[in-house]
Structure formats: structure tokens, C-alpha cells
Image (cartoon, rainbow, N blue to C red; front, side, top):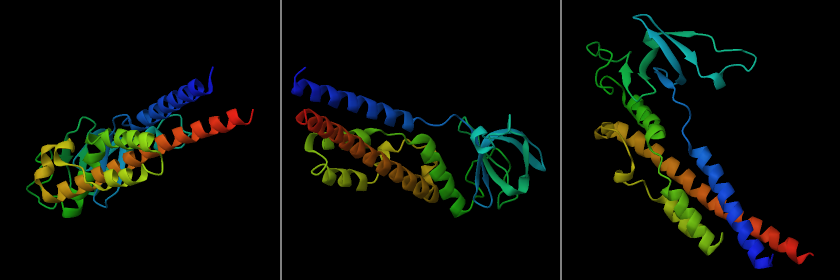
Length: 217
């Protein structure tokens, strides 16, 4: 095999391996329910029952001790849980600032500004999965090289996610929710953009190492 063919083969192999690794990393976690507490804490697991006094749930397996054969059922006072977001995307408000609000009503009613923003960020993690920034940075860097590809990568990562690409639920009509959602979507876009740059740079490192190895023989 000629040196040129060897370099092309290594380049394709490195691209496929790194792209596959990134794709696996971008796959969303297994569906779980999320309990948003009035303190701002998020608890992930599977909600079992909700009574007027308490919420019982099973914590997510990776949040319990490895020594435990299976997670134990835990309970929280209803007054400490202001919202439950189920794995199917529905919401249920439990503790609100307005006594007239009942569970199952419009999910933002009675929530504070900080809680609306928090819910927006949480939903962005669930719904925003655009891979375009990754491939744009990857392709540009692979074509121009790590040094020249740095400027386009910075440009791509600094541009906010356009409204049509947010893939957001109708709750974006609320300004506080929209702020949290946009903030998290922008953060995710930056991470994927730089992941694309890093993957392309890794390809160049592999090629450079292969070139040095061939010259040393």
C-alpha cells in the first residue's frame, strides 16, 4: 500500500471512529421523570405515586450506591416539589404560589421567574438536538486545517441558535421560559461546535503521526 493510500485510509478510519463516538455521546439518556424542587434542585428517577402529602419515586440507578442491588423507594413531601416532568414530556404542577392552581393545569402557571427559566433549560436539554454545528465545524476544520479552522469555529459557536432550529414546545411564548431555553440551547450548540473542531483536529493528529511513522522507516 502506498503512503498516499495509507494516509487516506487512516483519515477515513479516524473520522468514522470519532464521529461514531460523538454520535453515541449525543444520544439522550434513557427516559426518566424529573422532580423539580422548590429549592431549585432536580431529582431524576421514576415517579411511583403522588398523594396529597407525599411523592414516592425510585431514584435513577446511576444515582444510588453500586453496592445496592436495586434502588429503594424514596419519598418527598408534596410541599417541597413544585413540578414533575414525566418521561413522556407532560408536566404536573404540585406546589405553586397560587392556591387556585391544580395539578395538571398549564405548567407555567404559578411558577416564579427563576423556576420558569429552569424549566426552559431543562426542556432544551430534552428537545434541542441539532447536529449541524458539529458537522459544520468538523467539515470546515477538516478542509482548512486546525489553525485556519479555528476562526470559523469561533464564529459558528458565537451565533445564537435561530428560532426555527430550537425545536421547542409552545411554552416559548413565555419570556422567562424562552430565556432559559435559549440559554441552554446556545450552550449545547457551543459544546457540539467545539466537539466537531476537536474531532477534525484529532484526524490531523492521526495523519501527522502516521506521516512521521512512515518517514522514520
